[in-house]
Length: 192
Ligand SMILES: [Zn+2]
Image (cartoon, rainbow, N blue to C red; front, side, top):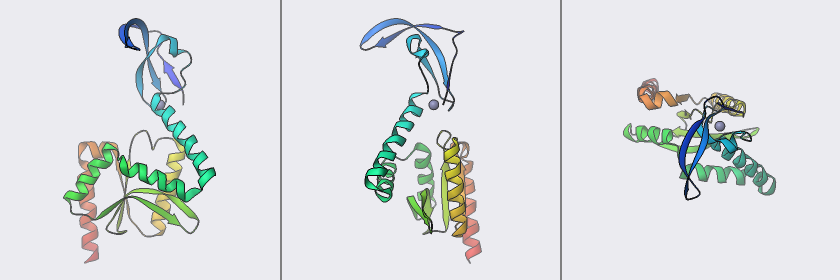
């Protein structure tokens, strides 16, 4: 992660800082994840990443410590629980579509192969007839996430479970609904 700070274009602004209004200089900062925000001049020199990226790295470090202490299946259970409690807004949209289409689904389905645990699939439909992955912008762009997605796709393919990947854009503009409905209709026909 790196941050580009636009030092050429300072912004003078009065903002609330620790309960008091202060006049300060701000710059536009852009993190390599794509997130953009206004940074105060005194933080501009030492900034390394945006708040979201920093939270993500902290969570990763915490995860590694838990893994060492309690083992893999405990960590998976924790991740699964927290994801079940806090679905992303994209996941909430897809969930609403599945309910509308009358599809039986499980969220955060743990995917295993003979070699061990692969990862959590966002939605597993009709007891293994269709897997759905929601591809958000930030989470799926870094290299590790891309590799993990590929491992999941390969494991599903091996089990003969079709995978439907819905992108953020498709979910937001509603094209994803049509793709999902078509996919389910195709499955229905090929079964009969
Ligand atoms: Zn970032």
